[in-house]
Image 1 (tube, protein in one colour):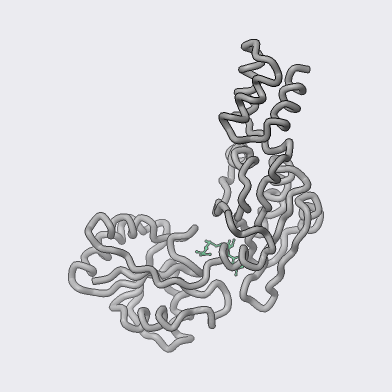
Image 2 (image 1 turned 45 degrees about the vertical axis):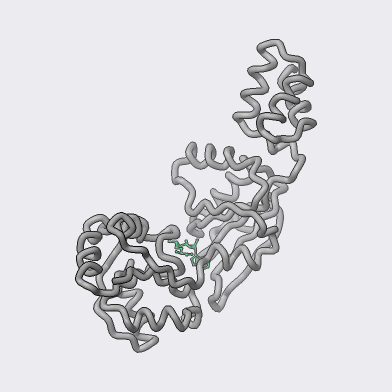
Length: 274
Ligand code: SAM
């Protein structure tokens, strides 16, 4: 029987589809990240169902039980506290195990904070990269952001409000002060708000952590910014110069290898020579 991945509201309880409500009503059991939290959603819609918990600390051990229920012919609906299961939420291991056991999980789409934020951000949305929560360790965060310097698409981060000031400082340091930033706060809720400005202004605006939940979005790398040169490209450039290549040749070669701007690479090569 089917394993349903049911998207649930990210704040406003009206943001649930008719299909999601039907699937929850017809499920034999609902596997929820937090049974009390989901209990409130179900109570709002007068749905009474057995609930089992499925969270990051017990997902592994729950899998066999869920597979056994599917084998017995039960319909199992998986929900997280908000939005899409699996997306920065539990469910991934279960999905993998279900597929391996021959079941095709059925998504029941609905809200997710990242697309809700992106759609109204005003940033170009034709290409984007979702990063979820960044690593906690400073070095790992810095390295990840450095690897994104040349990414032309918008970057989307989940972050706790408490760590937003540190995230913004990292963005200024690693991606530059001029990048457009959008902070989408309390989406679909009473105090929904979109802050838009440059990265350096965001640092000032959010020197104190805001209240509520936030999605942070950063505009992609401008096409010919000197900042688009990645550490790897710079290393290759330096290697070629040390090996005796001319400034122009080194820039041309690295541009061909990486697709980065030849002019920007030439400027960087000149700086490296000095
Ligand atoms: N699975 C969820 C989804 O599809 O969006 C995300 C779950 S993740 C554990 C929670 C994070 O999502 C929050 O820390 C915040 O970054 C973001 N988020 C969830 N609801 C939000 C809301 N209403 N407004 C702004 N951000 C939200």
